[in-house]
Image (cartoon, rainbow, N blue to C red; front, side, top):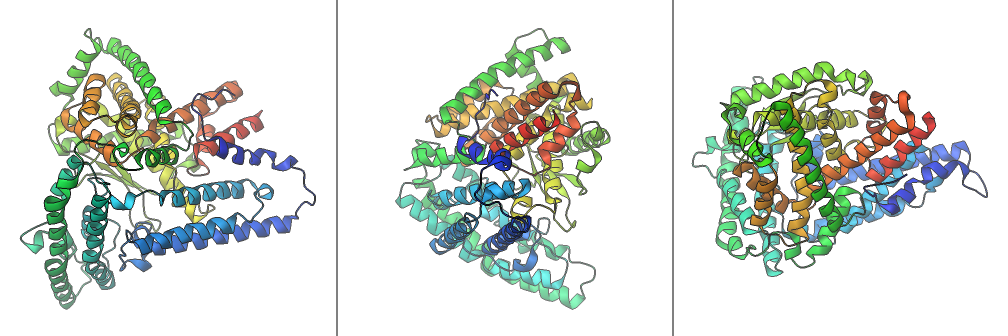
Length: 603
């Protein structure tokens, strides 16, 4: 079958064993008991690995609802910790490779291939110096810790023991931030630094946490919301404990980080390059990121050209919408009209939030048109505003998965900063992507698949996850919820993901400047300055991550078209969606084999 967007050939060949197992010649076939024993042993290894991995990364454990490490906060940037990580990955990779994958049943083979690939990619990641650039406006440990300490994130604050666990974690903050400074200094010595503009954004974020009154700190907010079950004595003691730790340990550590960034790091930060190509070994590092993020063997040049072609195609689709709404000007005049006309602007943050919530409720009523009821997650979700201290640099929307114990729903974080840059026509596609039937349906459902090993339930493949999110944006017409301007919004969202292919590879592979990126955006999409700047700086901070959306979407769309052609009148979109989602997130290469096998079985 013709493949427009190649997947990784090595992984495809590995996954093809799924189809060949039944006819592989063997000198001695294993018994059913032996096969079952292998599956049990492999699952035990996966569970052992998962337990060891979250012990090594306690913040991840907390995010997953594993609370036994809620008082721990190690320096994960240290050489010792990175070596422990490498040894863990290597040990379990060798352990699983002694099994004969060909004799395993389907689900076990999937787990094996994904586990091996993930371990190999994790080991390769340690060869690149990401630990020397640990801070930017998206991955800011200062923000992450403040959100945890605010009581509105994954760290629980229900009992006195919870409060005491977080107090112990707070006491470790100075050592962690010292580790950040240590590694950044090492990066400065090796000319491995962030672009200066990103660190200026980061500096603003750190400054927001340096308060004069301790009660204004996010770290103090749990004291303002102590449970009613607390005695007066408990409240007084915990309040004094938090006040002392924040005043004497946390805020001085934040001040030290802030002073380091302003006084030392900014002067060493890059001003003549904005991508990984501008640091030693950066081209190989970016090539790794491309393979990791997309699960394909596409080169940066090939991805760049796919982006250019998609931008041109989507422009033609938008012209059809212009005809539908009776607009008689040029494409760029339509961009300006939809960007600047007041009818497309929200009057308040509250109006924007309410509009998104109402639209999501309407989508929910219609979901079973495209999904079987048993493929809808049990967990609920909420739509919340992005916190003000990080909204300037945050993306338009993001999703946080629900906790396993049901205590925290999924959350679609909506950025309500700078309302003229958040047009009303963006609402529909963004909600479909971040909430339903996009990330919430896929990720919450995956969390609920108790038959999967933990590393699959709580892990993910970016190209699949974001590809699914972008694919669902095109379902608005099938659900009957799109107006012509909503459809335009979906095309613009898809256009953005296509632009990302062009500019991400432009920044990191072709040496584009920040201004070149902005100029390309302004020339090809209806974008206000705030959105363009935020997006451009996001690509600088997260090399290759932006590629996953469009490459994943193209693969899922390609597979749907293939199945529709193969099955004809027997095609049922609900069953197709079941087949795509039923194994959780997969590398695109493995997904391709799975869907082809299923289509063949239907015939």
